[in-house]
Length: 282
Ligand code: 13P
Image 1 (cartoon, protein in one colour):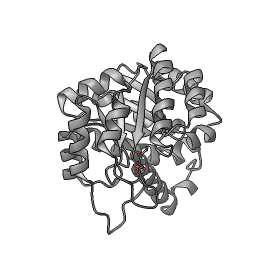
Image 2 (image 1 turned 180 degrees about the vertical axis):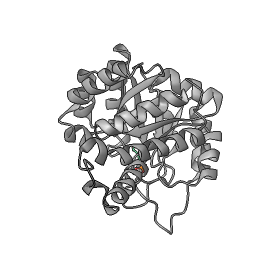
Image 3 (image 1 turned 135 degrees about the horizontal axis):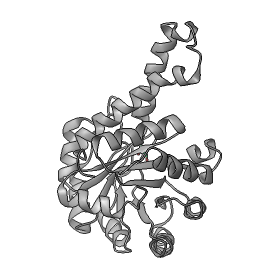
């Protein structure tokens, strides 16, 4: 059931659990995430970065695939199709393509411009029944992320966004050995300032379980996972090929070749949903 992310996140915040956002890259990814969510009766958010959108030939293709797959698989749990780290232009493209949720990442703009653009996109998306995520404080890639200023978080939260990503020392991809960990002090201060606002934790790959649980207890209601599914897919595919399975019989058939990777994604998604506490919450 394709819906905006607003209701599921309000429920998660009130129920002290988090909904997982799993980024999708292709048909196998989408199918694995949807089937796992249905099996576990968990709400779920399918994240699409602008790069992945391009890879799948455009947001229209993605929206059409997700809508049709949701229907053909008979998915009954709430599913949001969400743009991840959208540019201003990307947000409008996804709204037009039929996404049910967008993220406007205005964190690199001066705060006044981030506020102005976010405000405009809140009005447009709410008018059409979409949910919207905003970001304050950068979430690092290769380098450390910059912690968000709680006052700035309040000014963005007050614009009526449905979820807020605040940088708390989290980064995308694998965490380096010398990573300082999440700044719970920042998270707590942001939560105090933004009250009921569901907070979003990006960079879910590789964050230790105890930190995930503590973050949820401090107001995180959405956790984004991307790299970990890619690594699971890669490892399972590598094993299949290294064992020479692609050389046996019809092992070269993509339906066979990609099956272990797809199963591995399911296992990772299941593990995360159990950790985030969203199982049975659909
Ligand atoms: P990871 O790739 O580190 O899991 O981060 C995902 C993410 O935050 C997408 O926005």
